[in-house]
Image (cartoon, rainbow, N blue to C red; front, side, top):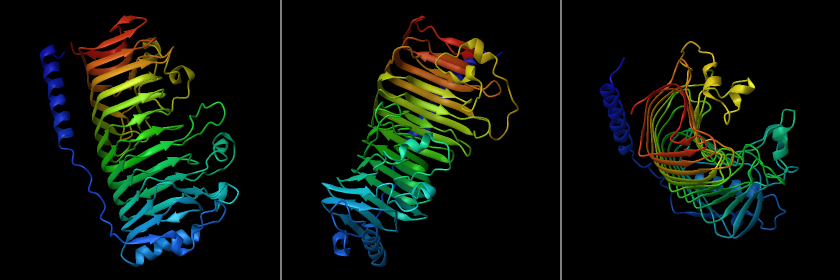
Length: 430
């Protein structure tokens, strides 16, 4: 058995190692775009909320590309449009009082058969969407199809794949039929000052489904000064992601700041700081399973305030469990967790290690639990530090299958009492 001294040294080393990795964070390189203006009205765009302006706006984009790049300007007014293809060295500048609006579902090219994304680009560089204006997805007629049987496809609002130097700044994104921002396999991504709003997935009048605000996977990512409230993940990333800073963002409805469920290829070196969460289903959410997992490591969450959240901290590796007793995360007990079967470790096993939770205050919605960290029997979560964490909730914080866990100056207040955790197969470092 390891001595307490060795456990403490190991935890201290991981804290120093994680802090050093995060201090090495370098902000993404911003795109460089020529200051040439291509106003869409010069290409025949009409602001009447009736005309299909897809061709006019695409012609403006193509003209900018032929000129070596520039700013395609959406001036004041409301412009209906269908799918657009981005080019290199391009800034789609949406001016204040300008609305770029999806064609309605009955006029959108491909409709539910294709679900073609609205703004797309692959293997591009130096691209931006900026301005004080709005992109409106008119998503309400699309959302019910998420719950209907059939081969239905809904468009994403912004979809960039394997691009370098991306900036999305100051715009407002509303009511996408599906994801609002979907960026995968990309380098140097900055999302700053962006507002993303759609109804909650439990909205009694018009629930939105899968309307993720900001799905960004890749390397060198900055998400800052954003105001987010949607019907699914407020931020999420998957495997192949590293060096991410999420700072000074305000989260409302949605599933919180998430990782997964696919983490194969690894997720590392993420810092979430100076953010608020109000009425979110989760604050911090990390999920995966044995068919899609990888290493998730070196995560720092600090200076966070959560109000009336469903669960402040959630981390588990049984996302696809079919048995009801393993899916009810609010009520899973140590006794139930102990019955979860072990499996052989493979390259798809979720491995979670090196987490710092620091200066976090949370109040939890009635009937909900203070948190849950649930490792797999064959792969416990390792190296977790809670420092200055204050949570008030009805149900206890559960920690199942974890090693090298330490609480410093924390007040976890639940019906079980102060700092009374529900644990099993957990190695605490006191």
